[in-house]
Image 1 (cartoon, rainbow, N blue to C red):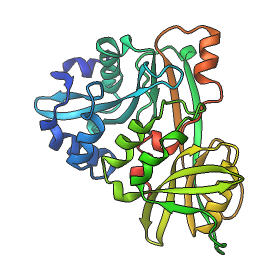
Image 2 (image 1 turned 120 degrees about the vertical axis):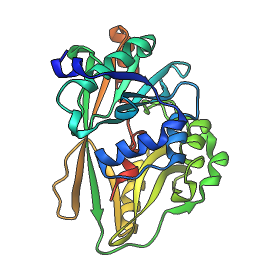
Image 3 (image 1 turned 180 degrees about the vertical axis):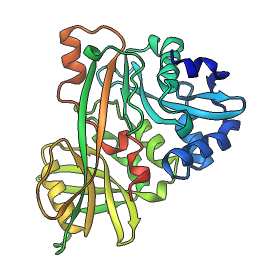
Length: 304
């Protein structure tokens, strides 16, 4: 442990709702983004498993990690964790505080669970002390596609309240996380639901759906593709029509695109840490050809 870290009188504990102002102040200091109380409550206190764990010096919150409980698609009764809101106050970086925080969280809570999904930001790459051989790495590239000549509209938009009627289309075996009606309602109906819509494309009795976020920047309205469900068979055709119909569309891909009308916004790292031991067969069932979407992260909140 770093000598400077030893000299600090630090307290490590779970955050409470009453810690919101401290969380908000730290988040803004680290990311220059504002976080509302409703977001804080919705993201980390809407179920019995999700939480934030922080480091306090006296009464000041100086570091935090947010852990969102998710269900594994391979076994829907298996709870795993997805790491968000990783941050350390600027003056306290480089002395091992975040690494120490993650070790304590793993020892006290995560050792009971099989997998932790991590979205490292540019400042924090710590991984709960999990061995490198047990971490699978992926990388996604966030793009904005600019369409200078919009084509005739083929897709349709639904209000998000239509989710209840579409629950039979949610069976997506290629998603890493288990996503049923309850998942989509909690994710998109319980917080700022007016910012989202469902885009649908139909072809040969098949239906494909994207959940989109309405995003406004200096150039006006654009859309962020957050989720896909429905027919995988026509999803590529759906995507093609969607981007052709709109002036700007934001999405991510694991491959880089070298075209003049595609603007690279950012690259997003994903680490999947295996806390428990898995057989080769289990690893293949859990991880092989599994998809992640922008909606699995908090990236869509801060896209500008």
